[in-house]
Length: 202
Image 1 (cartoon, rainbow, N blue to C red):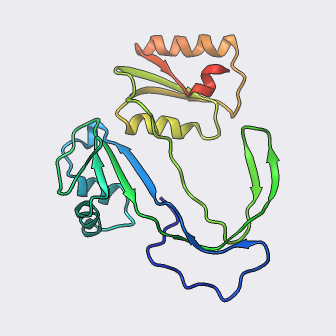
Image 2: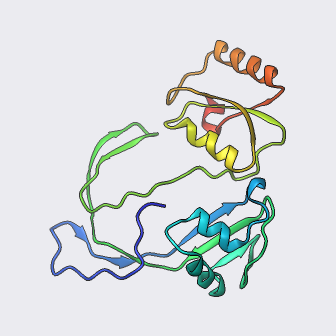
């Protein structure tokens, strides 16, 4: 998941002007939906493989501490997972480092915000997580977002049968020709079309 702190950092003797001091955050809920391909794994094995920053022993301790729930029910011991299970790891609060309070904006068009990242500001890696299981059967996915591959990978990880995938440029204005091509491609695969809500509006 990128940037990670397990121990409290030593407080700095002084901070540059305009910086916010280190303080604990509110914790975080890490949510995962088990794809069919991962069914049969234990909870500890799943987390140790999914989040490689921690050992199986660390995940066993978190499980015993009641930090992990399956389908809304807290777990206290390892369990075998089935496809579609929803896991939540409620990570307890941890200290955030001191960070600058302000930064320059390079670009902001309402959809994309680009900042002049100051030294010391953490970077988090994110991924798309479907709020519902993908529809059954073959799918032809398409998207005109910054990184269309994220959508395609997320569908496959969630158990979707992605027969084909078509990336478009970010904010692509779809034409009748585009839609005709996509419908023809879906017919060739005997598949349904699937995309993001933003692309559906366009």
